[in-house]
Amino acid sequence: IAHYRDGSWETPRLAELGPLDLAPHTQALHYGQAIFEGMKAYRNLGADGGPPLLFRPYEHARRFNRSALRLGMPEIDEQVFVRALEELVAVLEPFVPARRGQSLYLRPTMFGATADLSVVPSTEFCFVVLATPSDAFFTTPVSAWIERHYSRAGAGGTGCVKAAGNYAASFAAAAPLRENGFHQLLWLDAVEHRYLEEFTAMNVFVRRGDLLYTPPLSDTILAGITRDSLLALGPSLGLKMEERPVDIHELTDAIRAGEDVEVFGCGTGAVVAPVELIGDETGMRLPLPSQATALELRERLLDIQHGTTGAPDGWQHTVAPL
Ligand code: PMP
Image (cartoon, rainbow, N blue to C red; front, side):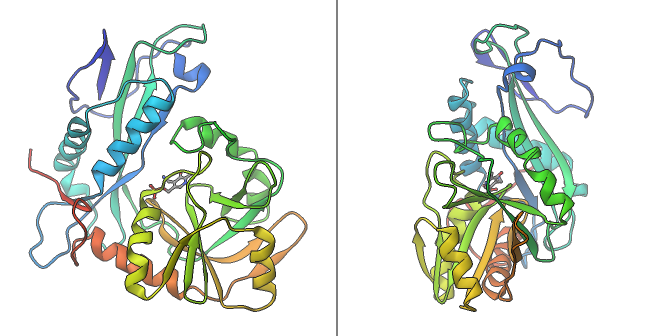
């Protein structure tokens, strides 16, 4: 935990998990000045073992700072951010699960801590990193519910950063999904309700034949670090990668026509999650039989995250001892 006061951050210190002392008029509670990251520390399962590995932590630090700036909050030094994570993982090392796919989930967060009811940015901020052991999410394929009314993000909004409020907007939309036994919202663009944007907390990929594509980044799509990693890994599986808009009608027509189509989500939590069913409120239910590419990409990524194969620079960050 670290506080920002009088124009500078104090050095983050380790603390027991406990309640925070917050005034009811704390800025973040009223105006949503809050951001976060989701990251994982993995047990090093490579031949030589060693301390746990963080996956692309500097990418997360940079995205955290982009989120901070978008919400009018101060950046935090990337080295300080990564060092705070390392310290936390080092003291919690016994709780980093040993099984492949499991991890210590890390949640850096920052919020406006000034107690003031006027709509002005805070001058005091709080940076906290939480950690909790995590099972592999979605070890079985997921179902996706096309959201046809609400939208997650608008042009010029905060959809491209990890603002806490982006998720608040999805809770009501997710109610029919749960009633129908689905797992993930599949958001469409806010203008035409036609182009795929993201799942609730994952970026979306579509494979048709040997072409693997994902919507291009925009100000309504989060620049997922897993998405970026898959764009880099895809060609090694013989796939042609493309970033291009994905029309929902084109996709559902191709599935109905029995074409070789695969859909999957990717993100820190799920790593890669194959989609076995797409549905919506009209009663449409489209099964997707193919999952091979998603499963193969998940294994490739887990190999890297657990240190059992090599990876590009910065992807496997060994946690330095305390
Ligand atoms: N989109 C949204 C809305 C998310 O919450 C997440 C999870 N952080 C992602 C995409 C995937 O991002 P990443 O691969 O960096 O976890």
